[in-house]
Length: 206
Length: 206
DNA sequence: CCGCGCATCGTCCGAAAGGTTGATCCGCGA
DNA sequence: TCGCGGATCAACCTTTCGGACGATGCGCGG
Image (spheres, rainbow over the protein chains, first blue to last red):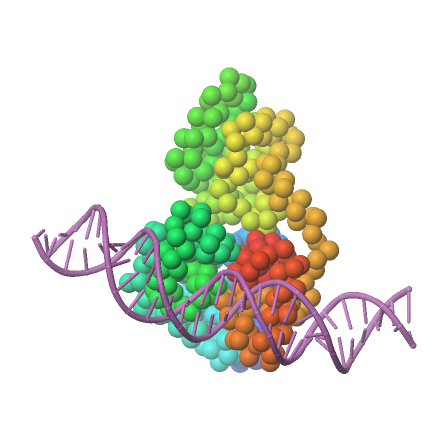
């Protein structure tokens, strides 16, 4: 029997996860918490679990889910499976570096979730298929490093400046700004300034 | 004599702050740390300070500076003055809600910094002039609430989608998307999609 | 019932952004 | 020394955006 702990501040999501877990003959939910602090308290109380399903975003307090994952893995050697709604590349990397055993997006299919729980309980790594795809994409295109100047331009783009404003701010001609932006779009595989800004943010390059 | 602690992961910034503080006859730096953990350890050691200058971004670990501020104020009742480079409206609010005594941007003039330290040491609130302006701007324009549909469009804009892509995604005509976007720009006081996305992010509306 | 805000769509037009090509200059390493 | 990549700029063209109209339908509260 795999003992599962749910740590998520959304009651609805907890209910959903509980339904999935309890639907499996060899799994059960042994505890639910809505904050990272509660979770650590419960674990400190001596109870044990085979795997912890952890949401990265904990409501208002925002004790970093990644930090919580790291603490748990270090202190209690319990596998932590991060299950969260959205997640930028940077979030995912942070969680994995902190010691999370796996990372799933909440919209992952149920079988994937169940498989992930089993893998995590067994101490294996469990990454959702979307997550794998994104990390692969990240590994595939790292040769494309932005130059310092390009990054400078990109930052201003992400701040909402127009090409003209950027040109004035960096003492350039608009042509140069456009030139840099063209290179940026090529390197990032994006189609527009806004998309470039978005993916840059996702990859934590700002 | 006002005893100041510097908590910033940038050695250069620490040096700069130290120079300013030591330049005042009635202030001195009694400790420097580069991580939030170190800071908490030092405080736990029984040493005391009159005010702590805290950077919100702590290198890789990223123990939320806001969380650190909250912990310090609660545990040690020492005023915390947040001094950071950039800071979105959401960051500022989070820090203040967590209990920070003040908030200054690093590019604030020296006198403002010194005045801030004195105020903070005296337990008074100390907000930089830029910060005040931003918070005021935030209070002034809250009547302009985005409708649900507009927010939906804005989210896709922030994700880097083109008007055409948004139209297909939301089963709309491009004209409607542009219409929504025009309203969004009016309400947010922005001039372009990218700027709208940036300010929306700043205000934590996504 | 009428007005108002919201959502929906259309047209027209000027401005901004993006693509393409090509050019110069500079520094660094083979 | 020669090549290469980065940074800078230019001219040209297409696409996309954004602004300024207007128009319809719908629901809700005075």
